[in-house]
Image 1: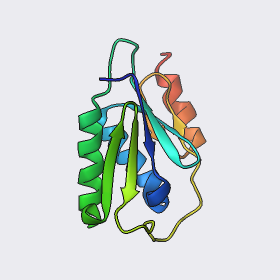
Image 2: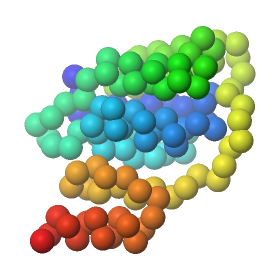
Image 3: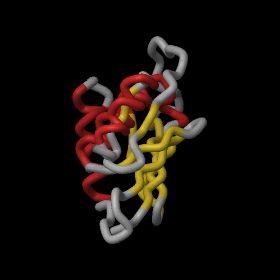
Image 4: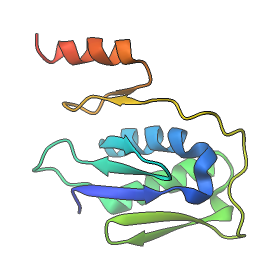
Length: 125
């Protein structure tokens, strides 16, 4: 069990954003988007993230889009690598990365700054 897990998405760049949302919701973690990867953090310092649960969520997502046979999930300490088995990356329409806003209190994620700001206000009522 770990406090933070990094998921390397170089071979699945076109689905990185959807994968991040799915996995963070399944695991109950705070997501942070990076250039070719994303990081999952626990909500509290006392909580830990189950690496096997993250791997299972990634496999479920790949299976849901029919790509589970083409990719391997390789765990290494606090890093999980999604690696293409045939050497090519996942093709698809790669949209411009949406700017994501994440609540530092509960992990709520949205691409709309106004929605994020209104959500943050609810924590201070």
